[in-house]
Length: 239
Ligand code: UTP
Image 1: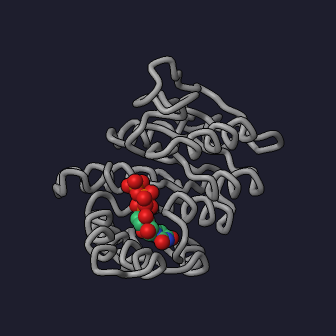
Image 2: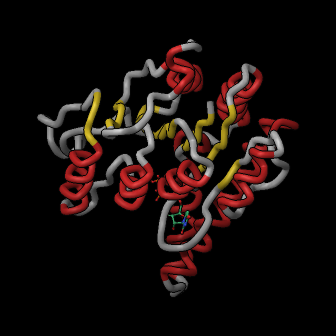
Image 3: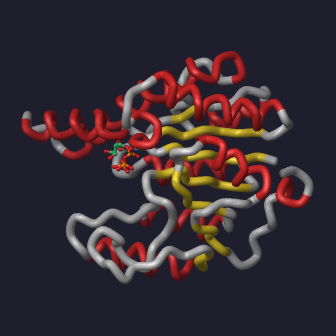
């Protein structure tokens, strides 16, 4: 089974410790060792935000700031590649085609950003679409999709499952409130919808939980339901 795992920058690089990166790399390696095909997309985290802020103070335009963000995600990808070792394609894939080619050659591609005006949420969904992944997992700093912003709204509840159309509505409503951030951005959700990608949004801090979600579909986050999407094959055989 082929899975794209999106590792949020704050999950992986929040502490900037080799141990955290090793832990996530080991989970990915175990999946590959047991026959799974995996592509990993890593985010920029607070380091990207800090660099972007300095660039903004220097007067850089938004596209250039995005390019700075992309560079940082690729540096993060290099650390992940070091942690994964020989199973990984040896440098960050910079296009979806390069990621697809690495998979065809039996390597595990690691990507950061790909192009300005998006985030690695969209990169993850587009990679999953490109390589025809059976599953897309967002391992993030939030533990799923909520009916509102849990930091702002005490009555917001977490969905165990959500239809893609409803997810799009939730994201649109979160975008309306300043400062709030949705667990998956709008472009990513649109790609998930058109590609009919089975998707999980979950807390990414525990690598074993991510591994379990890929193997069996068991997790404490949110499953995005899409009519007509096939069930990931390992969920009936692995675990
Ligand atoms: P992230 O994907 O980490 O952004 O990429 P984010 O969603 O803002 O970060 P989190 O989830 O809160 O940690 C970092 C930055 O890199 C640029 C964007 O500026 C983004 O904010 N980027 C990333 C791109 O322009 N294109 C890409 O394909 C990826």
